[in-house]
Amino acid sequence: MRQTIFSYVVQKKFTQQNEDIATEALSYLLESHEVVRNGMMKILRSISPELPSLRFKTQQTDGSIRPDMGGFVNFEPFVFIENKFWAGLTDNQPISYLKQLATNAKPTVLLVIAPEARQEPLWRELKRRLKEADISIAMHEAPPGIRYVVSTKLGPKLALTSWEKLLSILEQEAREDPTVLSDLFQFRALCDSAGLNAFTPLTASEISDHRIPALILQMGSIIQNAVELALTEKAVYIGRALPQASWERIGRYLRLSDGPDKGAGAWFGVHFKLWKTYGIPLWLIFHNTDWGRAYEVAPLLDPYITSKDLFKVELERGQGIALPIRVPTGEEEGTVLRSLVDDFKFLKKLLEILPPKVTPKEEEEGSET
Image 1 (cartoon, rainbow, N blue to C red):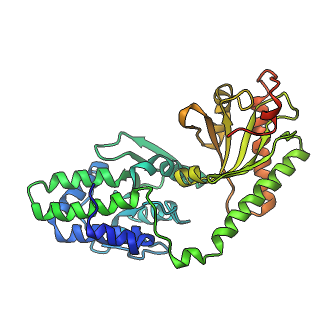
Image 2: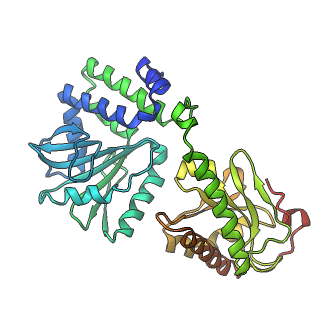
Image 3: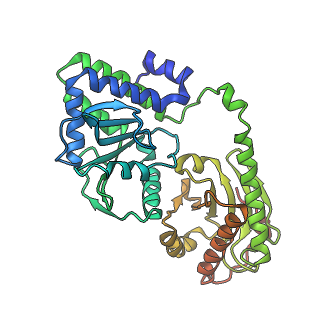
């Protein structure tokens, strides 16, 4: 879509406030145009038909939470809407939001909106948090325009949609009103710009934020210390395999075995592109070579993937597969390292079934690209 002056200014000067600006823009559309509000109610009632007619307000503090947007009858919330582009979930999302909605005995909904490309990783993270909080869910058939809908044990429904689908429905509702369509066109341009992987102008606060390099250095320390501990417990084998870094990743090669001809070789470390796409920093990458044995490894990973509620990613051009390794949050370093080494042991055991394969010296040295 062609960029508008509105989307250009936002992306040029206010890119760090994409979520806030989108929330205010959506609020303006809902308050200014009855047809847009009717379209939003159609979307919400496709998730929960019993919802009453709502008025929408932005960033209203409710208890200990502050949703981007709420749908209210008087002061009683029936809907919370959380608008996302690439910012991560806060500690309160979605659990505290669902608990707050659950105080309303009537049907309630938490709707999360995000770019199409972020739907799957975001939904996995939402489900993981529900599982950790011991909140069971029941899947529903998703109505048109909605990616996923679940009922939660707490009572409220949780749903996920994309900016693209939301706007398509609102534009269809407003198809007879050129003024509304013009406003929606500008809003779509903003959402498209915010959802692109385009160059984002740097801000002074980002450049001077010591936490960014501190986090990267800490992740490097975690990689090194986890591998050293895994070596002492014979969960991995190094041999001649080397550390490796590029513009996209920092880490090292290793073998998930206790010897040079067992298991399979992998690269382990922080992969920035995969981190950006899936929200997980640490990855194991098995290349499609005699050393990495990606296609032999892939089906053997299923027990680990199931037990950890994870997934695997096929690399471009058949280069191999990538497996995320989850880093425990809110824990001391010892607990984090113990978790990673236990993961290595789990994976090593799964790969023991592979027949031994002697690989060329250059691959043992980790020369894969």
